Amino acid sequence: MSTTETAIASAEAHSAHNYHPLPVVVASAEGAWMTDVEGRRYLDLLAGYSALNFGHGNRRLIDAAKAQLDRVTLTSRAFFHDRFADFCTELAALCGMETVLPMNTGAEAVETAVKTARKWGYRVKGVPDGMAKIIVASDNFHGRTTTIVSFSTDPEARADFGPYTPGFEIVPYGDLTALREAMTENTVAVLIEPIQGEAGVLVPPAGYLPGVRELTRERNVLFIADEIQSGLGRTGKTFALDHEGVVPDMYVLGKALGGGVVPVSAVVSSADVLGVFRPGEHGSTFGGNPLACAVALEVIAMLRTGEYQARAAELGDHLHRELGLLTGGGAVEAVRGRGLWAGVDIAPALGTGREISERLMEQGVLVKDTHGSTIRIAPPLVISKEDLDWGLDRLRAVLKG
Ligand SMILES: Cc1ncc(COP(=O)(O)O)c(C=O)c1O
Image (cartoon, rainbow, N blue to C red; front, top):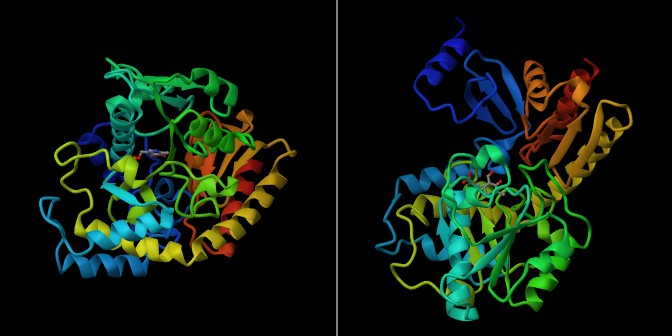
């Protein structure tokens, strides 16, 4: 057996099979490139589902982490630490908001948003106890907890995990009429992804997001934007909602906030909304720890320059222009997305998304399928134009067969 086969067999023997990874075993990585245990190099066009927006081994982020490792890594929230205030202040400023509630993973931040909205509904809006409703969209992906999968429409994510958490109403994504009709006086929040990543990088129709803003404002309902995958530079702006000039009541952030170094997530909102929490009502041992804050502070400083957003916009235009040329030839049926983020529907006759991903892997390019024959392309924002073009050449070669 090869080194790769041995490593995979050993991993499969001792791990739950809740993933179906491509058969590549990564040993090191730098920038947009990964190297496997046999020394083969791969261009990373997935970027840890946007967690690696700033690339592998980003010097600024690694240095920030190393410096913090030598000082203090964890205090728990039982005490203050000297990076906490800066992290909250800077993240709130980046979001144009006031208050931050730090967590670790994306799913935890979504759970936090759900709990915030319910508490706000009871304490501020005056919804009768136990009656709060949150409206979500079909084909959403917000994480894997029992509450979150309760409002998933993906049978794979949901089946056999019941009983499900009540209090959620699902409406078709992009449909303002359905959203308006679903709202009642007990609706406390609308929770949506401004671009649905896992669903295949679905961009909603123009006017939908401003429409959601208007409706939620009119009905005294919180607009919660899950920008865990779409936010922090990926689409060519700091937030995907910025493209439509929309400001939500609450951002839910994760992935790139930890710079691909440590898990960092957060809910960011107004002092009024996050002010509903009293000590003991919510928390996390690791949320807002010194190491997380040190890395995230560097991420925020990098985003403040606008350099990464500009890069994603410019290279993203190039990516979408090149992918657009592939449609019409028969091999690619549709391309969606914004910035350095694309969902590419391959003609099913050419193979499933998984098969295309495997063929690309053989060519030295790593991508991930979403559903059916759709692959997603989301390179680190630090990728060079030459490397991106090289990856696109490999895609063309694979589609030619
Ligand atoms: C939009 C969105 N929300 C939430 C999550 C969950 O994040 P995590 O896997 O860190 O729990 C994801 C992960 O893919 C996501 O894309």
